[in-house]
Image 1: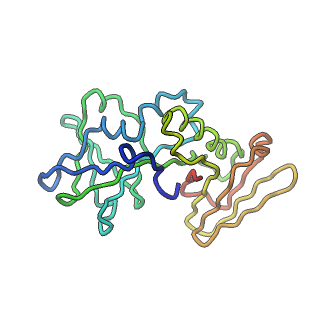
Image 2 (image 1 turned 180 degrees about the horizontal axis):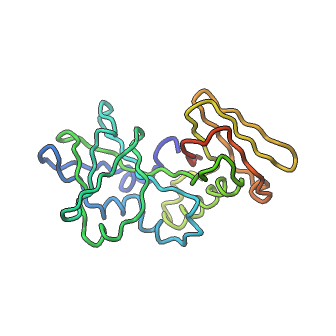
Amino acid sequence: MKTALQLPLACLSLLLALPLHAAEREWLPYRKLVDIIKLDKFDALPPAERDKVILYVKLVPVNKAISPLDAGLVVVDGASRTPLPLDANGRAPMTLNPQWMAHDAQILTSLPKGEKMRTGFDLGAVLPETPQWRYASVMGAIPQTNAAIGKVAGALSLFVPKMKSVIFKFDKPAQLTIKAASGEKRYASDAKNHVKLNVDDALLKENPLVEVSARPLEAEIDD
């Protein structure tokens, strides 16, 4: 998604104050982060209902002069320290860690004193390692995502837009080709090296071969 999915302010648009501490200080319990992005409920879905989807936590400093790369997040579980690196967009892929839940692990940050972060989530489609795949193996993430949001968010899903597309992001100009029975459909990347595809129910059923001139860096699920 272009921005984190927005649920009511009490949930995903929550501003999390950072306690006063030294250069590295407690931010919030891992369990709290799991609750904010509903990671436990997502993980509880049967694998066949979420295997095409990547759930990211998205953390954006309120101070726009600070990059998410400066957040310096570390999960501390007893003597164990595990970095939680964010990308330039403030995202990190998340999978549930039962040990951190059981041990009430804490997340530390090195953000400057008094700074805050907005917390939400993004969704991505799982990409095959090869430059060829069947249409439904990736675009099937759209119906899977919409069904998962309904089950995970419950009544709050009314505040979440319906997902309709996948944005394939490349590191250079690229082309994506769908080899449909009715003829090949070719899509060239735009100025950002992106190709945006809306899901097509007929193609989901046909499940034709898809080829790309280069493997995408990621596949972002969008509305």
